[in-house]
Image: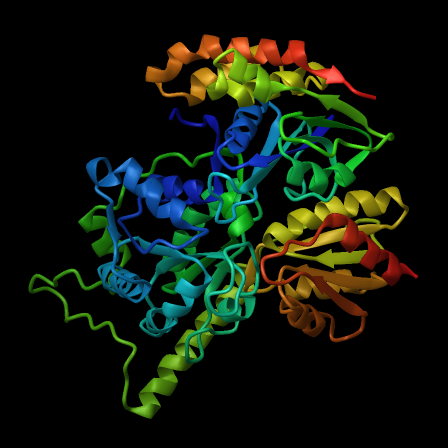
Length: 181
Length: 360
């Protein structure tokens, strides 16, 4: 099984680090993984995206033109990647700031209001983990255990006390994601 | 990190870790996107506190390559890394290294050119790397990694080849391989060579003769043309030996192939995806991936070419390696090129379309 995923949003939203945690979690499960950022002169407020591939087989191209899953966190990302989701694939979007919602009927569209929820619950820092939780609910690319293992592995020891908060965010994300079509 | 541990890192980071682990004595470099993580990782790892490896951020690329020249004269394993515009600045030094027959490693994490260009991935320095770049009749042993694992593995290999033939070696990578993270198992630790080992393995090195032997002189200068021709002939003979012994390539799904893609580095990764899609549509296509760009696997391509209906070179440049592929098959097979420029990476689907037209 191969999961070809694009995650796109504003720089500073944690797009790249979410991708990194996803890739690391895949690694924890012994899968083949590739994490390929669009490394422009990115900055807070600009757009950033990363392609993550998690597979049981060696990964060929790290750069793709269509995806099994697109996670889009702002309008420009939605406009850019909605057409690039494979037929029958998954589009996950955060409703915050979206005024032209997705239109395609041949893909599975999910909405996750993580930005609003994170703001309400004072969990902005782990907003991206809420999104990751949403993904894991609708497409279990990796298990929550692997994600926690990956966090323990990648976070410096002094940040380990934040892991429960990350776990809470993942579980919250699983709760609040809804299918739209 | 434990031995043989599988970890996730960027290609650039893998280069740095591999350098420390393979007994590199010195790194001299100057930051430039998309390869800055090499120097950053070395600064973070502080190998001068562990293996004793020297890491210097020089004031420029010109300075870096000349520091490499100095270190190489003493038989040390020394290297630099940069990206396209920076490597252009180094060309004089690279030619001098080749002329003085010095082993050294240069890593080029290519970006789009010409000029200052873009910071996005490119393979447009193929000509510069395998056809000269600097002046004079010289060659660089050139390895083209297609994965983060190969970024790690080729550092030691490049040093081994450079010392075996007393010739500079190049790892020709690009922004995609440098910036992407993949699984990698770092090479085992190998200690830096001692002064005694260097004296034994590099009798040409200028490490002080302590009254024993005749002085060693390392120079690329020889004003007597008769002597200079002899020097050139010796170097050329060495190149012929390298061409005979050091060609490396990967063959992928060529057994039943009617069409062949020739691609190196990140383009070869894209080619594998192209092959998967094309085979689903009934096009029998395989891949020949040159791992050494010089020496070039001409004979292998000629052999495969005999049973192909067509060859496509996929390059992230305006068509450079295609010339060597055409030479290899002596125009007996139609050879086409496809590529994108300026930092745009070809998408697998657009390459499949090109293949479909070839088949028609």
